[in-house]
Image (tube, rainbow, N blue to C red):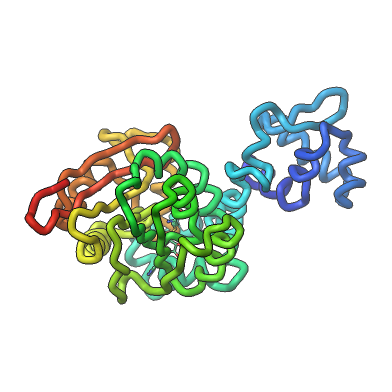
Length: 327
Ligand SMILES: C[S@@+](CC[C@H](N)C(=O)[O-])C[C@H]1O[C@@H](n2cnc3c(N)ncnc32)[C@H](O)[C@@H]1O
């Protein structure tokens, strides 16, 4: 609670933007530059120092070694968008845990909005959520795209691809590839803007739709990044069956997710996000074995797991060729 709120306040009031450009300053100078109250700022700076985010030497505050990429808006590893989502959305949703514990999730959720109805309640919320997803997913997507080895593919369909964190990385690594992001209509302008920013407008397009009602666009590679962890097993099975229908013979499906250890003892980040999924979505995190089982159930063959150096890993399934063989 303290670390997250302190990070968010420092980000929103420009402390990190200032300290990424200046080597270090006193609370007095920082408060004047940021037009904020000095006493409040100094208390905040001391908390950030105690957490090891800042160094405080001789009354001057500076970013601690190694922190910069995660607080610098210009860096692809910027994580403060996710922290903003934790404060703006997740914190409020945690009040629901009490109800879940007393009467169960189904009863707590009854009559309430579906997960993305409340997350996308207005334009600002859509932008905030998509920024959070970009921050969580884009950097590791370079590694995931390489692990997926997309060289043999022509058309990626990025299901629930958001503003394109995976598609952008994949298209930069594989120049022959084109990608369609299939997502809810309100996501479209954000994807189009990112595609233009990255010079990919001619290879990255958007198809608006609802993956519960509409068929998925056809492609030889269908990607699901942080999608299945939003939904229960039955819904995941239905989504993967749809992917199997949309996948060209000989093509592949990529599931990119956090993975629980086989004994469900960790990793810690997966355990906490699994609790978060419970109060924010209808999903949960799974082991690699559970994803392989879902893939088999939907008709995919030759399942394989490739682990990244980060929190998001890859589980691959193959669609049989017309002659009935796997790849
Ligand atoms: C947790 S985000 C994952 C974003 C991105 N794939 C990533 O890996 O960071 C879930 C995505 O699913 C999309 N989504 C949710 N419900 C959907 C639906 N019914 N049809 C299509 N997309 C949906 C959301 O808009 C959002 O972009």
